[in-house]
Length: 215
Image (cartoon, rainbow, N blue to C red):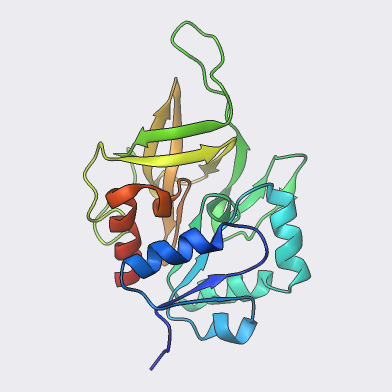
């Protein structure tokens, strides 16, 4: 029997304490680790992240964790990326030049270029609470992180870049920022990601974490 419900990957980038506390508040036993053997044995894996895409990928590579995360995903282990961790799931990012990602969900990361109704640019980064809605053409919320969330519930975002998946079916939820539809939750098979911080999003965020722990 596994000793922990979820392993949070520690690669030096991400608010590990708040993520851990959020999971523990949901009743989970949590291990924070950069040890490949611990990650391979995990029943669930969470990839956090804040900051720049290239820095995060460099740290994963330095710690020889890129192949570890890819292998865990290929095995079918539930994998959740949060904020920058979600963006890392994609093929590449345009942040400070083009950088390859983990390649687990087809698509890329692009700058937020949102405008008000009068055409003036909106402030970046996108910071604050935004409401979640199903993505048109998506796979629906049943059996996903969003299974207990009602459309219109709000969560907390802090980001300057956003995910753009190649397949509409991989976009589970979106929020609006001015004239822009922002991918808020993406998913493909056992791999899912939240652009927002569920651990900082009150009861809605906790519902999402509980759903991850039930997968």
